[in-house]
Length: 318
Image (cartoon, rainbow, N blue to C red; front, side, top):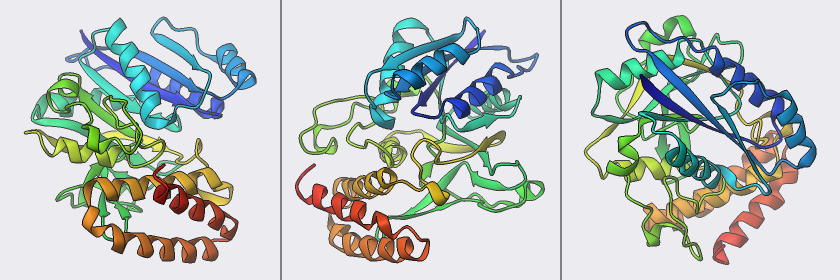
């Protein structure tokens, strides 16, 4: 039987996490392709009250494993912690890194396995992310990225779900980090440990995801390392997930957080320094100006301080 190990992180989002877990426990396998899910959840330093609430409310399932972290490790280090546990406890055929604010449709895993089986040359699969309500596409597998100004565009964004077959998908620069599905063999075969010069200043850690990035740009870094291999990235059209987006980081809407602004900018600067050093001096002022305008127009001018702190810490070598 095919074993799929799912890695999920929680940080102050117990309600969303529980909804995500319930959707995973309802996954239906195809009769021709049976599978077993092993779900690994790391609570990323939410505090004793949140962790206690999570423990009390978790569904009782033998395939659900909880790990409590005393501090917030961030996206990359949190998933790397889960992946080490997964490799030491189960022998999965596939690994699925999934955001806790995702609700997978009942046949999602079956569709991902179908895509992966039919196209073994693909090392990393993205799903169809839907807006809350499930009527519109949020992202068709992945995104395009403009390194000159550090901006991204979600492929297929806004398309009605009934027109999903009309989405043109010539290429994507990276798979959306909310859902990263890959055969286990590619963790070692296609991705070498993060090179020292690509870990950021003062960092010596290694792992599947680059822990230089606390939040954001981990999937972009992963895609760049993937391009060095003989494998590609793909979109599994019929694997569908309703994705709320930004619940853990406060990255959307009126609750947009200072932490999200800080880490999004700091990670963008680090990524450009690693992969596009000659574009850095164009990207830095362009992003700063664009973010000032965006924050002002959207009523988040209070976060200009976070933007400034990100630039200050980057130039100081953080």
